[in-house]
Amino acid sequence: MLATPSVTPEPSCHPVFIDQSTLARVKVGLRTTTTTTTATTTVAINIKTTTTATTTTTTTTTTTTTSTSVVVVVVVVVVVVVVVVVVVVVVVVVVVVIVIEATVAVVVVTAVDVVELVVVVEVIVVVVVVVVVVVVVVVVIVVVVVKLLEIVEVVVTVVVVLIMVVVVVVVIVVVVISNISVITRSETAEFSEEGREGCACV
Image (cartoon, rainbow, N blue to C red):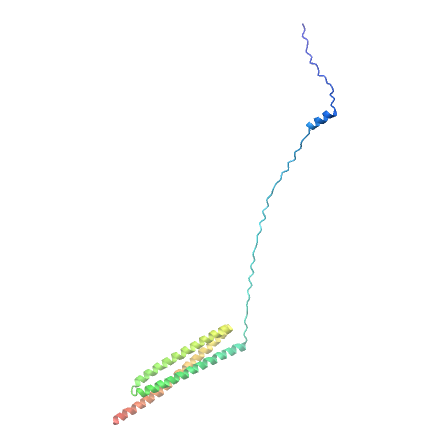
């Protein structure tokens, strides 16, 4: 027997009729859901604030201008004050020296060497006292002038003038005391000789 080839029957295509209600149900089942995802990105911005402090320094320079007349007046006043003080000191010292010399001449009649020693001591003491007094006065006046005027030229002028005054006054004091001492020594020697002659006669 001959083999009979198998024939696969073709499927039959039958039209399918879908009514509106069925179609609506199918559409509902096939509905597409769209999900929208929104991505939120947070960006942190650091703003750095720099505060700059500015310090302003104001320097005020005050210039003091002193006229020449004021300087001259100050110098004259200073010199007059110093001269008056020195004259007073000299007068007091001379009076003291005269009193001491007179006392020594009366009490120590024959001791001429003692009188000379006392005179030398007196001269030294007088010179030291005068110099100390004048220096103190000069220092005080210079300090006052510096505080009032604050000018270097004025201070230098005042100091120079005062040094000259001090030198002159010291020379005058030494000369006066030396003259007093010479007169006293001569009177003491004469009195001593008269005393010796009187004793010899007796």
